[in-house]
View 1 (cartoon, rainbow, N blue to C red):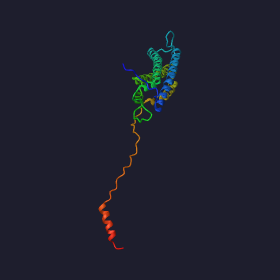
View 2 (cartoon, rainbow, N blue to C red; view 1 turned 45 degrees about the vertical axis):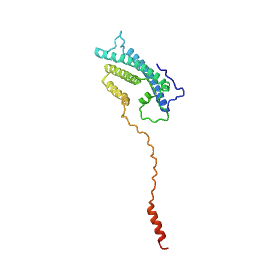
View 3 (tube, rainbow, N blue to C red; view 1 turned 180 degrees about the vertical axis):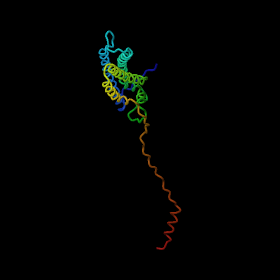
View 4 (cartoon, helix red, strand yellow; view 1 turned 90 degrees about the vertical axis):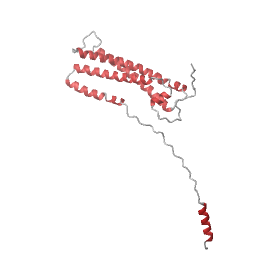
Length: 222
C-alpha cells in the first residue's frame, strides 16, 4: 500500500475555510438544539404520563398509542441528529489534513464553477458525507415535527374547541421556516469574461497610387 504524504505548507483557500467554519458552527448549534429537543420531549413524556404505570387521562386507546409513538420517535430522532452532527463536525475538522494529501486540491488562485459539495469533495472531504448530512437533516427536522405533533395531539385531546383553533394557527405559523429547506433552482456559473486583446491590422499602401500621385504633382504647373 503506497504511503500518503502530506504537504505541510498547504493552506485551504479562504472560501473553503469559510465553508468549513460555517458547517462546524451549524452542526454545533444543531447538536445543542437536538439535545434541547430531547430534554423537552423527555419532560413531556413525564408530564403526559406516557412512560406507563399511571393514568394519562386519555380515554382513546388509538390516540394514546399515537401519542406514545410520536413522543418516543422524537426522543430517538433527536439523539440520532446529535450523533450525525458530531460526525459532520469531525469530518469538517479534518478537512485541512485531507486537502493537504490531495494532489489536485483547490488553490486560492483558481476559478471554479463547482458547487459547494464538489469543492469539498475536491478538497478530500470524506466519502459518504452527503449521506450523513441527509441523515442529520432528516433526523433533526423529523424530531422537531414529532415533538410539535405530540404537543398538538395532546392538547387536541384535552382542551376545548377555541384552544384547538388557536393552536392550529400557531402551529402553521411555527412550521413556516421549514419551507426554507426547499432547495432553490440551481444557477449556472459563468466564468469572468476576459477582454479580447486588440489586433493591429497592417496598413497596406498602394505603391502604384503613390508613384502616380508623385509624378502628377511634379508635372503639374506651379
